[in-house]
Length: 103
Image 1 (tube, rainbow, N blue to C red):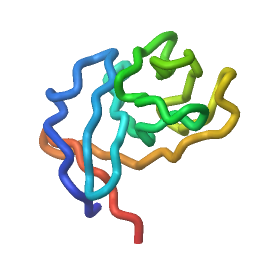
Image 2 (cartoon, rainbow, N blue to C red):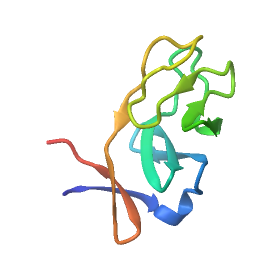
Image 3 (cartoon, one colour):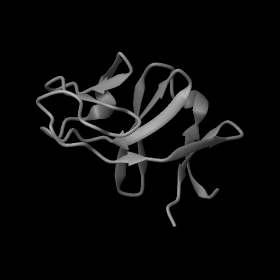
Image 4 (tube, rainbow, N blue to C red):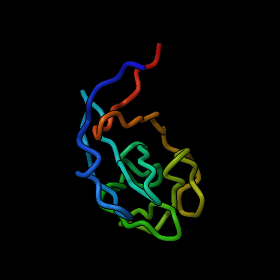
């Protein structure tokens, strides 16, 4: 599998969200139960920074108005957000996190 290195897996604390950048993308990257996932770092409701949010019951909560997003799919789960955000395929190799390249 080919991809671009984002960080070391240890740079993402369990149960938290961090903001990482790749090219012109800002990603909200989380680690929940050891699984590392990435979605767009912009809430579809009010452009809030999802990477500054919290993990609650396995979902990323936007710090501005409390909309919940599925960290695996980017699906908007609660109001005020109604539109999903993009999700990105990641993989871990030798302790490093990579953004998978789409062909």
